[in-house]
Length: 319
Image (cartoon, rainbow, N blue to C red; front, side):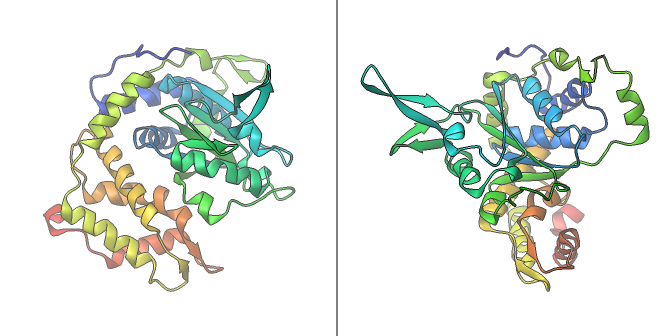
């Protein structure tokens, strides 16, 4: 797969629109998910895609890797998938120990049906996702940069599944819930080129960034200004979630850091170099929803809505 920029863009805002155009060649009706995946790539975050079978989770991940112009690997999780398949292993060759890299040694890793593999294998992803390295036989091995995990899970599968623990969920920048596309989008899918039941346009998705281009875009992201009043606004929102009725565990400090990074990327992709309260409100559900542990019968979205209702936006933004 090409690693060079093949489709130039004028700004990160232009990049966002081009990304939606490219991925729409194979996945129709998921524009918001495409934007969020681009935000995650810029913010160095990982994404959990949740949705019913046939909602294009795997295809969306593959198309995103093509659009980024990055090296891609897929691992299908099953109950017998071993940690070594992810991290790699050390073997003897000619009497010398040799490290054989596992699936995580790539730029974009599709962890398909992550909830179908036991906790021991799920945990093997923790170090890779957080530290960008793996440790095998007491030796650390750095992962390529960039490194993005796109994991999928089917919430309607109840046999032989293992729910992700809170510590693993907290490593994901976003949890994106995919629904079936609307009727018009599903009709447009029928006109896409296919070979039998398989889409035939994945190779037509042009790489927009490549590794070098992604690094350059991240430098631009890092220069985004987070005003003090917006930073304090985010802190107040996070702390408020910990005190609301029906909440057993509110937003973590890591979640707050992830919210700041995602808000910066969202601002840049909207053509601005400074984060606003609107950026925070718009991106917060995708960053914070899956980090809340609530009592039975309590809705996470309602908890977030209540937190934003109780914490007024900074006066400067409202003016």
